[in-house]
Image (tube, rainbow, N blue to C red; front, side):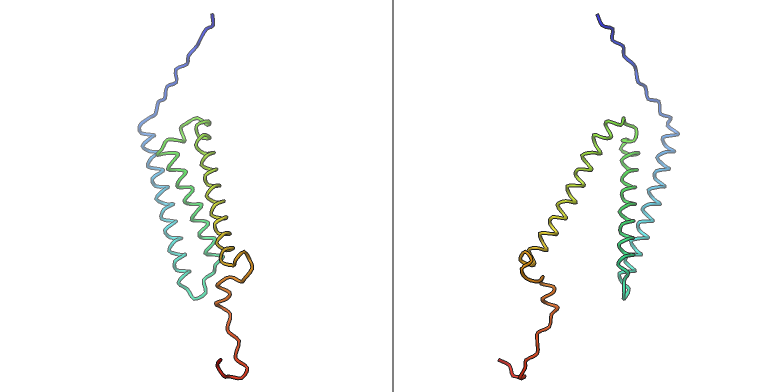
Length: 145
């Protein structure tokens, strides 16, 4: 006969420490949100200018994306209690999420390439933007046809 042993797992959470943790997360999320808002207003101000610096705007947009991912991490970790789970459960959620992000990125990239090819008949003619920018040649004799 085999002997089966069981272990009892108990979770003791101190209510005061949990409340303190939630408030700390709240203040961090508030700071990140206000920072994102400030960066968004900066981007808006840069776009209103006569000659916006596109590299700076792109850097600010990247920073907003990073801050948004940080906020998502804290929300999922603290408020959805995923940070308290075992590693295997976390990986079960995170790996399909990363595959979904890859899926979205790949299809957006492919859709953009398809749009660009469609606008140029697979590269056989210039894009519509280039055609509109070109000026018509002047008539030699000055008489209309």
